Length: 340
Image (cartoon, rainbow, N blue to C red):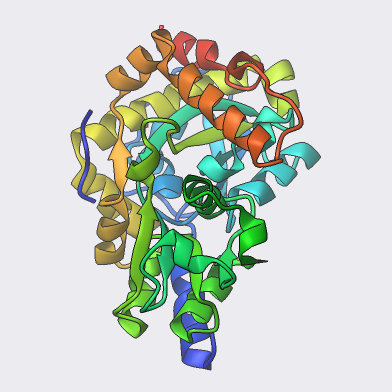
């Protein structure tokens, strides 16, 4: 597979919020690319959630720049969110049609609250970290450890504790918002965290001796960390034309991103008003999947295997009561049909 390169003073709060939570959407501005002529006589309105980082923004930025929304008769309004669970809520209330989630939020569609309509990337940015002097996950026993609940940071912390023969009952586990974790680690108010890059890069400027105790690749034999695009249950059930057009546009954007990751980095930075160097560092912790790869992985059942492994994890972690088949929440057939 192709691998791309990719609180407590006021100043610290501003830096953390700028990095983790914000970014002005470029969706309302006229694209500088060359929009293609629409293939349709009508225009469908779409509210699309995103997170302002490489995973959560790059395809939307590419679709806007290359006129893909217009090509497929879509009028897309992008909406900025700080995490996946909030987007799942917005899908449920009808305020969003589509959104983006990281691996830690996959339990929400698996529990019936939305449908996963397309895979995006494989995340490699998550870490369990400890302050200087903490040299292993076992050393976190009895220590204060922060994590953003229901995210990939929560997921990797749970997996790392399990591998060490521990659970969250063995630590002082403190759910926190991402910006608060940046502040708490930087000011050494917590002993460790389940968290991710690029936010950890900001922490390391204040705490250069921060120790990385676990990362995604430590668990790749048992569970993957896919990021994905989701749609509301009613959208999938009642608006097949909208779903098909959005998937066609996303498929083209996936192809363009794999062909030119450097352009994807630049467009992401422009879309969310981020430093290109920050986005490049973010992309360095992402495994980009080409469209051919995504199609093959869907067709041969690999994606279903990934999701089945995640379901098993979420059952064991208490997020799901019972195991469910990936076909109940992943519409891989619709993704493949959009390419026909």
